[in-house]
Length: 274
Image (cartoon, rainbow, N blue to C red; front, side, top):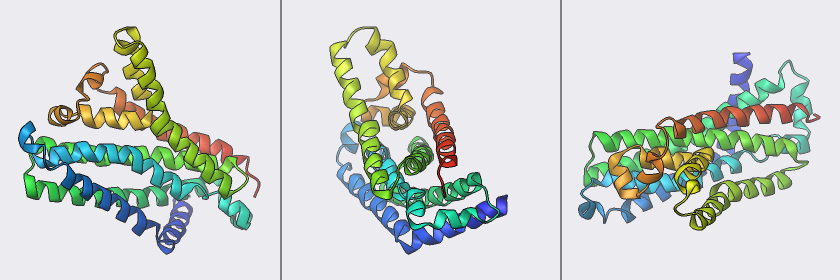
């Protein structure tokens, strides 16, 4: 089983390298992370924090928007594309299960995204530490950002498989992926903001609102990173929402979501005809 999963992962990695996905994802992540690092260098003196702390706060917002987008872009045709090309039926004639196919694809895509996150955030973090200093707290914050970004990416990789299996073609899967990104990353927060304005000092703002933030994997990443460090919370202003929740809430959300999304993808993929 492990050998078959690794074989599929190896094929998917070669396809990703051939399609320049590894270079594109790593390049985008590095470019934006470095740009935000330089742009955020100004407030370090005024806030009394090192440059790496400000850089982590900026890169957290970048990860919320860019990591899910890259994950969906890599996976929208992972199943639908193979169905259109007729290659899925050929693969299924071999002694390999759909679960092994899904696991191999997941391992390859997560490795691709993980390399991009590590190179992008790692290079920006090293530069920020070299130019403006770093302490143990900011280094821990950078490590937390990298790990949580991988968990967020794993969630959207699996959701991308589910969308790809649900649709009849790659074009439809791409459209649904864009809609999913828009709803989860953008519109969800707008809805919560509207409800918070309506009930700014009631029970919703004090108790329900923080849990709804933790329920969304993108907002859970924000809460975990921007509220998990005192210095980063000072820069971001997220300490209020984070302090209203147990410390385990945001990490638990990011750990559970990939498992649920993979389960959904497995159920949907079983119904796809080769």
